[in-house]
Image (tube, rainbow, N blue to C red; front, side, top):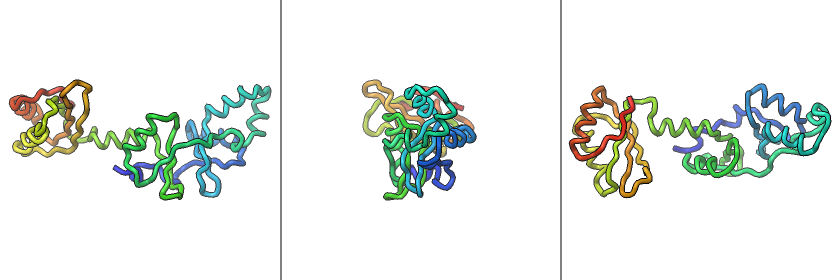
Length: 209
């Protein structure tokens, strides 16, 4: 799963320039129901401006006239120049880690040195929803011992039933020597499959219909 498949391309972005004033930036933010915008100058990504940051700066400067502040202050004066970025060819897992570790509304995406789009938190959620196949098939959670051959044994049971595995993910339940397998399978008889899995010595954690 590569970032280029989930990013919002530059051509579809609402952006703001360095020399635009804050009233113009706020208008764009409010019209699009955004919390932040990319700051772009001549196709070059410069940083991020956030709605919260605009108002925070107003109080920090102890201004008396809000309209005067918004009209006479430019984006260049208050935007954040510090940001982490990713490459379009990076895997989505890298972006997920960065968004978890740093406080940022989105990550700028580059193809080599060229700015090509942004990756949002929403895009990450969509990617992992797709990975887990949330809108496909029936879900079944299987708990098993973390031993060689266990996963192969489980999938072989499903294969022998002639059932297609649509998605599979292996998670660490934070319990010693155990692992949790989440499967999405294409079957109308999930209860029969669950029974056969249990008869093979596995424990069913949950069925998600």
